[in-house]
Length: 115
Image 1 (cartoon, rainbow, N blue to C red):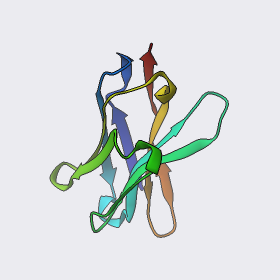
Image 2 (tube, rainbow, N blue to C red):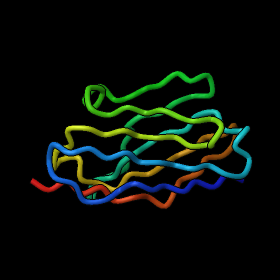
Image 3 (spheres, rainbow, N blue to C red):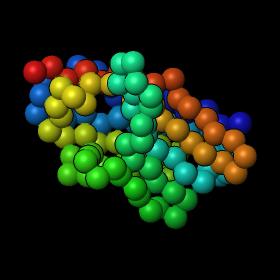
C-alpha cells in the first residue's frame, strides 16, 4: 500500500504563490508516476502535473508558465509550486500515485484564490 498526505493549501490573494507538498509512505519504491490533479466545484478531477520514476515531468500546457512540479526522493515528497495564482485556480488539489496495478489518492487540499 501507498499513503499520500498533502499539505500547503490555503487562502491566497490573486498574484500570490503557494507550494503544495505530498509526502508518500508505504511501498514508495513501487510508485511509477506521482503528481497532482485538481477538482473544481462540480467538475471532474483534471491533471495538473506529474513526474515519473525517471524524473520526467509533464504539466498541462495552460499551467506550464506558472506551476512547477518537483520531488525530493530522500523525503519521499512531491511538490507543486504555484505562482501568479488566479481566482480560477481555486480548487481542491489532490496528490496521486500510480503503481503497476494500483493507484492511490490523497485526501486533497483546498486552494482558494481571492480576487
